[in-house]
Structures are given as C-alpha cells and as structure tokens.
Length: 249
Image (tube, rainbow, N blue to C red; front, side, top):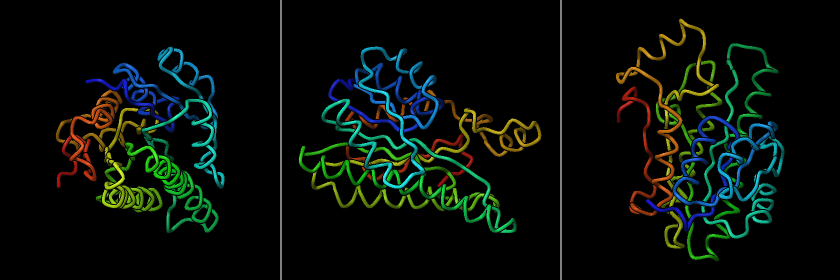
C-alpha cells in the first residue's frame, strides 16, 4: 500500500487514535500535518516519531467559532496543497436531560462545536479546494453511537456524531462528481484515554463486545490508511463499523 501521493491533515493528532492514524499514514509514505488542541508536547512527540513525513504541527481550539476554517488555512500555509482530511478530533461530555440547565446548555454547545461544526467547516474548506484540484479524500470519525444512539446522559455526543455521519454521506453523494470520496468510521470503544477505567464500568463495556475487547488504535490507523490509499474508491459513502461485533447491522 502506497500513500506517497497523500498530503493529509489529521485533527486530534497528538494522542490516541489520531496519533495512530498519523503514524500509519506516515509509515505508508503520506505527508502528515498534525492538529492538536492544547498539548503541544504530545503533538511534537508524535511529530518526532514521524520525522520528515510531518509537514507541520498546528494548534487550534475547535470549540471556538471559525476554528475549522482557520485550521485549514494554517495547514495549507504549512504543508502546501492538501488532498486528504481526517476529522478525528472529538469530545464527550455529560449532557444529562435530568441534570441542571447549565450543564445541559454548555455541554450541547461545546460538543456540537467540536464534533460537528468544526469538522463541517473543515470539510467545506476542503471541498472548495478539492473541486479546484480535481479530487480529494475525507474520512470522518463518527461513532457506534451515531447509529445506535448512546446512554441517556450522553445524548449530545450521539447527536453530534449522527449529524457528522449524515453529513459524510451527503458529501459522498454530492461531491463524487468533483472527484471527492468520503468515508465514515463508526468505532465503539477504543483503547485510549477516553475508555472507562472504573473496573465495574470496564467489565460491563467489554461484556457487550463479542470479540471481548476494545478496538486498538492501530486498527483505526490501518483502516484510515487503507481508505486514503485509493485502493477501493467505490467504498465512498460507506460507514465502517469497528466495534468487535457489539453493534452489527
């Protein structure tokens, strides 16, 4: 598999799945631009591991208005013509409908900004450039929750990822004529810092996974690298479930 033709911007690339995606893409020859929110030390550590395949390390708080468009402009300034985008960054906060008003309002606003508005703005900027370039590639990190829903105290997360999944399908259908392909990933639990640590919660989470364990970040990286390779462009618009058969459609 060869990604030497790929110049990709990866959001949330300083740790977890984002870092694994960056390393996998670089290992196959892609030029990688890493976005991070606040932890520059971790981002630079990933960049160091990637070496000369890293085209830049860029900070941007995706919860702020206009962050997506700003990030795209910065990335192009740093890396030149970008032909692939991976929207990996995301947050999850409690938005309990039975909780207090402030938690509800603030949680929905921040989650929608980071998980939906910023990725949408990045996709919009990418689509404009990709149309002029004659094509491009987009991978949007959605979630198992975007398909089956989530627990009652995390409705904003499920709604944001469901919106992103619908947007991804729309891009695939509407921009194919411009040479753009778009893929959705819908993982369940991934073995990252966001995974549960409480023993009882951990046992319950793994108990519903027939395969018996969370997905590993390397699996996410491998899947994204494959999708960016152009080896199966006809899969555009598809959503890839990576959840150990915990939700089978």
